[in-house]
Structure formats: structure tokens, C-alpha cells
Length: 202
Image (tube, rainbow, N blue to C red; front, side, top):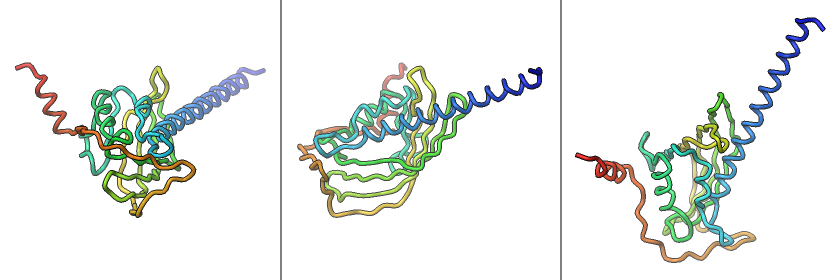
């Protein structure tokens, strides 16, 4: 075999290995986001909405930015903050007991140890004391490769369309009966700034 032919085969093998690695990365990223959504869903058949296992899919320095809840750059960041933020909403005793959500048409672009995923989210939500809503929104995630696999580093939800319905009905699993709501304090940017300021040594 000539040196030119050998070099061409080596280049082809290297290119195929790169493509395979990218396909594996995309699959792992999609699995990560699937697990996140799966653990968000709840409020039926005894399952709790917003399970804390969702946070297993986030990097240690991850941040949330939900349009309408957070101004740009003012969402919870880091495990301590986003755990406090998430805990407020969790489960039957929280303010958002009924959740079913999924993302479709996710396009993932991998760039080394980082990646971006863009998707359309379909969600069904009901806050306590409010009518249920069904909506579509745009969701963008940035991902990072860690020693524990791919994790979400930043997740944003932006705009979309929606409508209200009179009530949700359970399918094969009945909706959970809700206990009284816990006395919980939500995470806020202003509250975090005050907390951080109190830690500063004069």
C-alpha cells in the first residue's frame, strides 16, 4: 500500500471516529435532557412534580433563566442557589403541583467539551388557585462535559404561545389530591443579594 493511500485511510478512520464521537455526545446530551424533563413531570399517580433528581442533570455552576421570572443574568446560579429555587416549587405541597412537559425537535451542536441545544417545549402546568395552562415555548440549553458525563450548564425558557383550560383530568393515573401548601419562601435575586451582602466582612 502506498504512503498516500495509507495516509488517506488514516484520515478517513480519524474522520469516522470524530463523527462517531459526536453522535455519542449528542445521544448522551439528549438522554440528559430527557431525564430532566421526566423528573419534572408529576402531580398524578402519586408522582411528585419537580423531583429533586432533576438537579442531577445540572453542572455545579449551572444557572436558570426563565423569561417572566428572571431578568437576564439574574437567575439562580450554582448548586446552592438553584437547589433553593427548585425546592420552593417541588411536589404536591408546593405552588406548582401539576406539571407535564417535554421538548421536541431538539437540535444539538457540539463544540469540543461544550454544546448548545435548542428545542420547542410543550408544557402543561397548573399553579394552585389558577386555571391549568397548556403552552409552547423555546428552550435553549448550554451543556458541558464533566467527569460525570454531559450536564446542563444553563437553561433558558423564552416566550411562546399558550391557552387556559377549565381543568386537568387524570388519565390512567388519577391526579394527586393536594395537601395544604407548605409555608415556603421563594428564591429571588434581591434576596440572594441581601444574603451575599450579609456575608461580607466589613
